[in-house]
Image 1 (tube, rainbow, N blue to C red):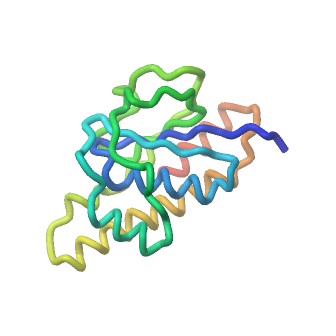
Image 2: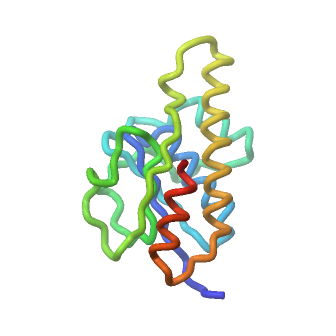
Length: 158
């Protein structure tokens, strides 16, 4: 088994909910094999309070995390995943290396209207979807066959 640690960037528009969740999830589920990052094309000022509550209830620490702009990421990435519909890979600046990318769009829980329970349910559903996708990803064999791996990455987002 390789000792390489893979850098994984999750992108979203505001970097206040889905991408923050994804960063925390990959850091936990990746068990030291993956290092997560997140950023936004138009970052919010703070992590959404429902994200903070949900992640705290799931025993995640968000210490050191917060919304940041894409250009604040200086590390070389191995993988880049967009997790919202309105931040396309094409809009990203060039990153060092040859990162593989895919769109794993998850509905924006921040946009949900309704009761507090309905809004919090939307955050839980976003978390569930991300948890499922990241669980699959961290268990993929990261072979040298980039075409096969790209197809698998794309399939995870479907």
